[in-house]
Length: 235
Ligand SMILES: C[S@@+](CC[C@H](N)C(=O)[O-])C[C@H]1O[C@@H](n2cnc3c(N)ncnc32)[C@H](O)[C@@H]1O
Image (cartoon, rainbow, N blue to C red; front, side, top):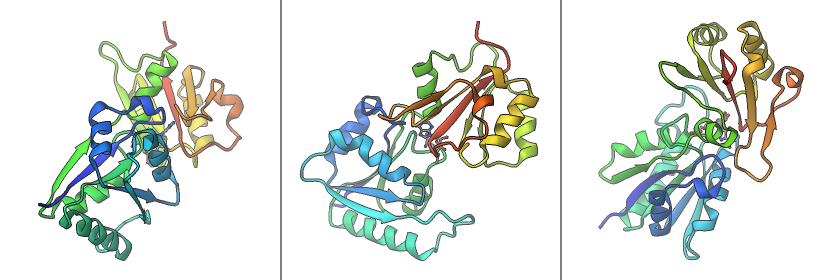
């Protein structure tokens, strides 16, 4: 019998935030695929799940080059797919670990698309996305009543970000590490900077919280950083 492929969201950092389903699956698998990208978020996912790994589990590192316009016939990805299919055909259960939620800005989405077309069972297990964990962690209500929240990747087109900021009551801004200064200035223009906060590496041992984004805007920020901002101050 063929093995099952699990895509597992491990949450943003605190190992206690894995779901029961994620932990059960992690303890069931024979092989863990630890993705290696230039951003190293894959190895963060592996470290979060480490307390739950059984001694006999085999760790297989795979490199997933994240080039824009990724083509499904890219050689490295096809090689990874063939290796995973080989394990599954040998009856092994395989897990791919991913930070936060599996279907939310994740390398796993591409892996899922490659494997979902094959004659295998794929099970995706959701995880808590970073911005959702931050709401509870900071005591920062994310939305209430008729509020609109928008999730904005800071890598998006500037005009688009400005439009979304204009119509949203609350925002979660992800991938801020490259365009942090631009984002800080846009929040300032929209009158939202006083009601914003950033957390880097939420739930990880070296978590950092930045309350004054304006004062910090010329500093470099960690890749795992998310901003929460709102139009009106918290009551
Ligand atoms: C490629 S996306 C992965 C998102 C992930 N799948 C999720 O559900 O949160 C990477 C972005 O997620 C956010 N992120 C992930 N983990 C984080 C953490 N522990 N603390 C703060 N932001 C985090 C950051 O904005 C980072 O640039």
